[in-house]
Length: 287
Image 1 (cartoon, rainbow, N blue to C red):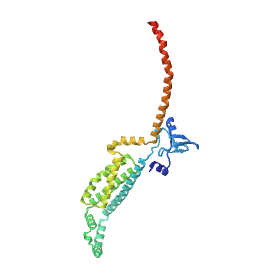
Image 2 (tube, rainbow, N blue to C red):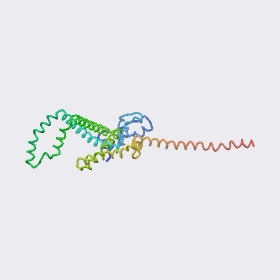
Image 3 (tube, rainbow, N blue to C red):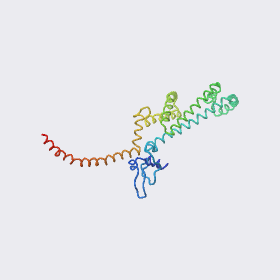
Image 4 (cartoon, rainbow, N blue to C red):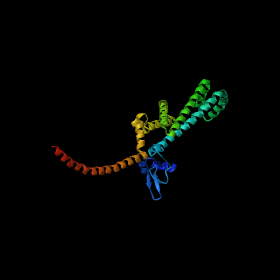
């Protein structure tokens, strides 16, 4: 799949006219309808005036090929992070509300528990052995300060997930590092939980987090992997349309300068050959 062409079809082409004459000529072509300019993303020549002009180093930064696919993958991870942020933010709010109305919740739970017990006993289930009921009982015994800290922890985790999602959505280098570090810190706990008991939910969360960490480290070359940031930027430059055009312009300039230098050398050759006979008589006179 041509990701560059797909992105141009979705958001339009990107054309630019550099101020440097030789580079500008590489990006411009003459066609029957008029001049055309090469798209900085898909490399197709588009008729009409360029969208912008200026120095080459101020040209718009355009993702191409694998970078477009990578940005899409990161946005999928970002959506998952945003969903986590919403879930834990809502849970933090519920816990905080529980702190202020715990007494009424406890009274309601005690009042309705006999009704629930008889209802579930009719289908052969004892709610007193339910893990959910045990969790509710345990929560009702927590102190107000513990509940407050729990709500604060859940809110902080929601903020971290939101920051991760934003960094991944924007595909920023800092966001990639932040997401990789924050996710890695949670992996040991997830491994411990899997060792204790394997569930589908735990397995899915662990697989998603591990996939994100490996993807960021390998493809984005974080922490010096595969040459690090310098190798990553070199790859981006090698795939840049402007960089390719600059190399082609330099090669053409060198090819044009070569014959000119050869012609200059050929014209100087007869003069150089004629000089010794002119000097020799003077030398003979001295002798």
